[in-house]
Image (cartoon, rainbow, N blue to C red; front, side):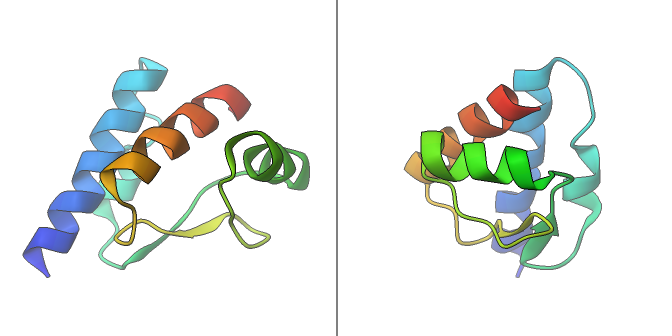
Length: 82
């Protein structure tokens, strides 16, 4: 479980670096394999169509299941739609 949490912390840190603030710090404090990202339907549609990032309505995403390649893509997408 510790390795999984390190992966979550890495995503949180990299999102914060990409956005130049700490808006995504809450992700590192979550203790689950899923995180809720605050996106509306339009933002989720853009993530899906432009970045091939699929989340259920409400912004739930499996952060532990992200590979290094998919992490890069989701960071770019989140930065673009935020």
